[in-house]
Amino acid sequence: MYGALDISASGLMAQRARLEVVSANVAKIDSPVDPTKNPDDYRRQFAVMSPKEVRGPDGVKQSVGVEVTEIGLDKSPFRKVYDPTNPFAATATDESKDQVAGYVNYPDIHWPTEMMNAYEATRLYEANIVAAEATKTMMAQALQLIA
Image (cartoon, rainbow, N blue to C red; front, side, top):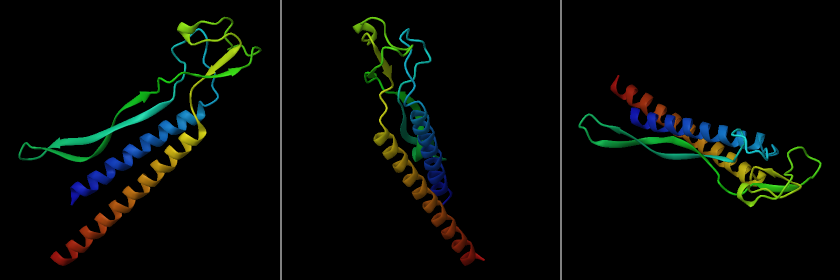
């Protein structure tokens, strides 16, 4: 039964990481991209999850939950907004740098997508809490039967 708690705990940690990524995306939704392509330019991020595998006592690999293996970057084109007075506006059109004169590039982040990701991560977090509570209840009842 401890494996069930480990699975729920890994789900809680993965969904927490996912919510952190969503909150970073929402915080940077209106951050302009520097036309000089500084390395701190923000792109939409997403959590990549995969099964968490461990070796059992018999040496066989077992899946015991989920883990965030990486934080990926969305490679979609930047969102362009015409604002020639903005200091981040491109001064000349350069297709190799994805710049158009007078336009400011912003990360391609959309409120509805991020809000749905946050909602889904929240619901999955809650589901893992319910599963952990059910496991704890079963363990307590099993101990009562033994005692």
